[in-house]
Length: 92
Image (cartoon, rainbow, N blue to C red; front, side, top):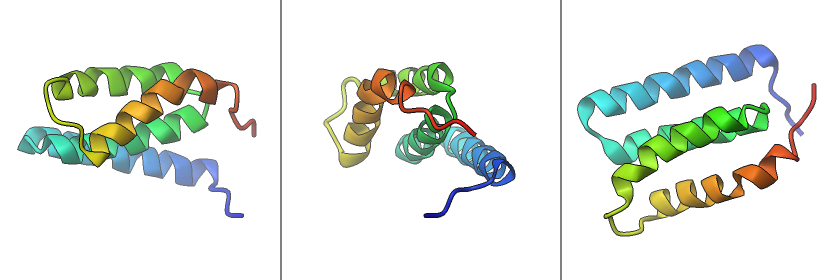
């Protein structure tokens, strides 16, 4: 099993934040949601659950009146699982 290094995780976080920002500037909400969902998964795996929850909560509000798509469903499922995931944190 491949375990990324802290440096690789930091790089991934930076790239995902950049992707979310670019998508936000372009008004590409679904691409922003994909980037934020991936970022939230990374952050929660690093024990930064509250930050991950806040990112998802802020963005998911924009999809409240939208039909359920696979991306929106995945983000909502991840958000619902957040309290459970906190107890599964990997310690390095």
